[in-house]
Image 1: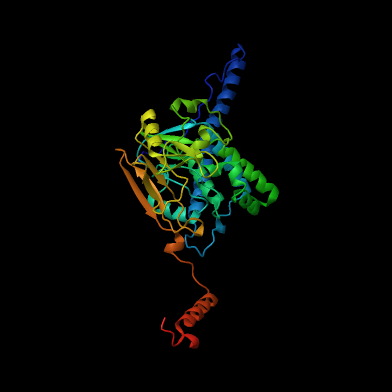
Image 2 (image 1 turned 180 degrees about the horizontal axis):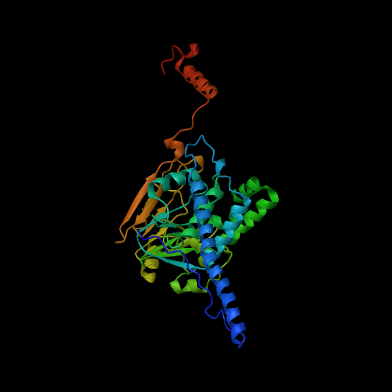
Length: 387
């Protein structure tokens, strides 16, 4: 893995002493005063930056130290309003300092949807490690549906601020106002901080989401996005025309990159059953890859049983990182790692609800015993029933 990035260095203006009086004594006194002030600033600035980084590291460590057992709560993370507000400002600044289309070196792990399933996510991180020891690319959909969207997105944004070259965060369709006002995120913010502060927190988070890139390119060969390909994308130079922060409309290239889906039985581009964007067949995927001179596409956006699925003549990989999705779908979580030779290895993880079933109360145990006993005792009316 790459070495830890050097901390940012701050320099003072080289012309700090210009415009002094020509009289030597006054000039010397002024220079002496300015040099003392500059020395103090140079000493204070790194100290301040170190303090901020230390606070962010402590915050990340606090978020990591949560119980992964499903019968435990993670309320002890207790993300304060001040912490989340400060983090959103710093994250927005960090994201705006990077290109809207991310070019990434190989030797990186790629994650799909997380959807606030924070304890399952922490379980995966225990296996992979975290930045700066592990480089990571996330394909969006951090929030909604699961109970801990704030913990999920706060941990990722903290690592983005601390180690910007070790973690990359793409935007998914749930990082849009039209979706996350409907599927839980805004209500989670209000529940945590009250209506007024919750609305402010949600707005600050949306400012961050509006700054996120929508696509990445690994080693110039592997295109990554949340949804899928777009018939409107013909050159990576088109990303230079995107002005962030931005909303995403219901049509066009950006919409497709966060909404479109593959269709193994389809041809070309067809209207999506989602009533937004399109589906695309193997022929469209092959043409897309040939046009952009890439080998394949890695995307998320759809729950797949094994967590990782190869599709469309192996020109596309779907990655989904939320196991036992919505407590309904018995799927595994998946991620893929792209090594420095562009070999791709898939990894899977079970849900904590499957690996560590919640403990039953004595009342629930007694009720279960009664049900079992009732099933084992044949009813008199059916005693002679040959069936």
